[in-house]
Length: 66
Image (cartoon, rainbow, N blue to C red; front, side, top):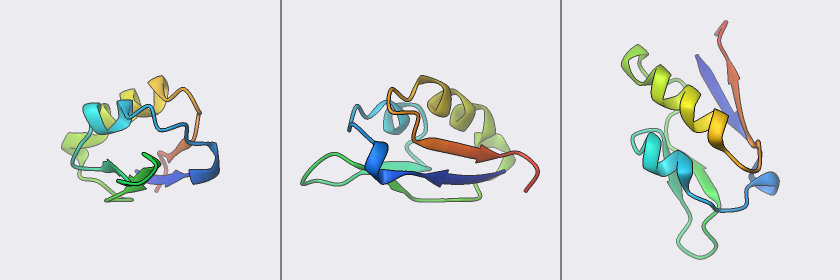
């Protein structure tokens, strides 16, 4: 799995950080998503999928073939 985020679409809701804190964080000044690991280990894939699914800005993109 490879992850990409579109920071300009992020609304700072923080659901990704709650669901997968090993993979996502937020900038202190505006709450915009920060991608910590673009190729997380297999054991985090389900959490990342859930985070992408609940993202209100639809700014998390997953490439499952990578």
